[in-house]
Amino acid sequence: MSRKKLTRRQFVAATALSSAALVTAPYVRGANAAGKLSIGFWDHWVPGANKASTDLVNEWAAKEKVEVSIDYIPSQGNKNLLTIAAEAQAKSGHDIFAMPTWWAHSNADQLENVADIMGPIIAENGEVNGTVKYLGMSGSKWLGVPACVGSQIKGPCSRIDLMKKHAGIDVQAMYPAGSEPKADDWTLETFLKAAEACHKAGVPFGIGLGETTDNVDTAGAIFLSFGAQLVDAKGNLTVKTDEVRQALDFYKKLIGFLPPDVAAWDDASNNKWLVSGRGAMIMNPPSAWAVAKRDAPQVAEQCWTHGFPKGPKGRFAPYLPYFWSIWNFSKNKEAAKSLLIALSKPAAIEKMVNASGGYDLPAYEKLTTLKVWQEEGPPKGTLFHYPNPYKHQTLSIAASPAPPKIAQQIYAQATLTKMCLRYHQGEAMEKTLAWAEGECEGFMRS
Image (cartoon, rainbow, N blue to C red; front, side, top):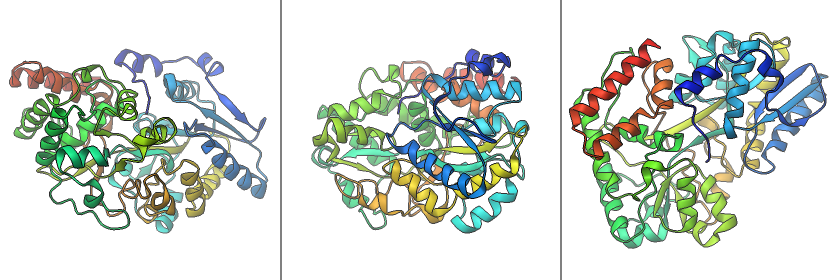
């Protein structure tokens, strides 16, 4: 994945865009000239994936006699985030907008409550995971319908051959296609030993420590595996705890076994690392594997996506959901809700997941065993455990369970990876903790 991060200054500036900015909002790939229901979808990186969404919308529109217009808005350069900010400021724009991760909560006061349609959707598709509730609800209000398009787990993608040869770990046996994981021994301790062995063999794990989302997401899952939180669910500072100290000690050891430039890695770096053939593991959705299928098939055929290692407090994996949200200034809310119900039908979801080659992940428990994840390859079954079909790990997001308005700032400012680097580079533990505590206090005031 390749996605730029907003700095704190850019974040504030984006949310203060004037209504004039809406005129220049970066819409691309228009489908249909105009209409009475307008939709801002995320511009999918997988070729052909947008067409599945367009076909489903047009099918619904023809049946319901609603004219629709669709804009596919890319995340490159944060164009989707800037468009969200512009529309929120202008109180005008699309009826439905695809909101990534934190952005539904950021705009909660301007979003229509969709609790009335979420009840029937959940009854049909099964319960959603905890991260979707954390990011998609404000009290009893649903801020959007979970979108399979764009939603992903950033779990380990391992080289079968290199892990077996250098670390003595058979990832296919540990996470067999078609059956439950046999991963009781896949712990953070085992993970660290494997990282050391692969480093000594010249094929290190590709785990970044930069300030972009791939790096932060991995750190967030590992921190949660220790029970380490910077701010708890009630908004209390919890930086100076034994759990946070344990997480920092673990990362200090791990960084010693990673490539020397990981502090500068962005979201493209780990993808390139895997495709280059120089690494034994990265943490990523199947985007890197998909690129390897095209550019380095000899690498792709050795890749296996599987679960995170278990820590003292459990096994956590980063889950980043999208939401289809309806602005409360929409002029056609009933049609918008009708469309979101149609897009949330199991057959529609399966069509979108298939179009993405298995990249997109539904949030619903009944939709984690679609055929695409069993059939995709090479090697066949490489994505079977990607959607967490056995609830083997808790799906999470970095900086949770802090109140989302605080957690979003911890996430955006990459506080976790910065802590790890400061401590690894020789700063005293208590000084690192004091710095992080000061950062979080600032987030609470802003």
